[in-house]
Image (tube, rainbow, N blue to C red):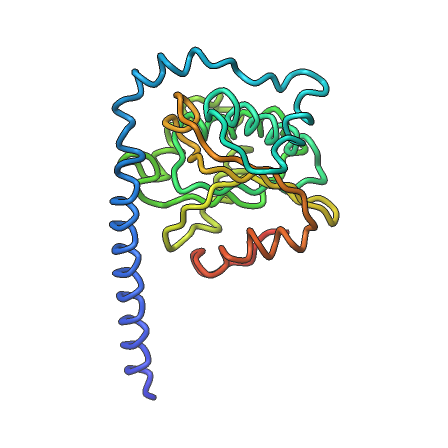
Length: 246
């Protein structure tokens, strides 16, 4: 095949891939409209959600009691249970230099992006994020991920911008999904072991900031199992098919 024909075929394949990506985005938006569109009702849900008692993850033994309970799937409030646990596990994992942390969510808002930044700033010498998988466009409402990052940076002292860029933002753009996905999890690997928290909740206000019941489950497994079940599937949809950080 001539170089001209090969080049034309490559261009056509890229155009078809982009068209397929756009169609998937439109389909995903229709599926999410009912879910994320309910954001407009947040005040009503907020008032109800304030009556929920927030889970206590500060007690020395309480976090492990919750984690043990979550070894089987369960439905829990996003605001008062899953969100505090989400922050607790990220803080625990990012405080240990031997742990490599992974996050995945199709939707991410400014507040949760700032949360991750704050936890990394609290653990500048130990925090190690392997990847943060998130959508490029319509990451939250009509915002692109670049806008979410820009807004989060406004909440971070300028002296901490360099470490945030290296430890978080570079990890986003190095492994940016090219296709839509809807998995939500945080996990970590250390030595030959792995932990993962899987939930139906997007990392946004509608799921973490107001009353909304979500499914959640915690698993422990080998590093190899985590790689195969949670990271390898992203290889086929990340831009330029980069290697997963290990």
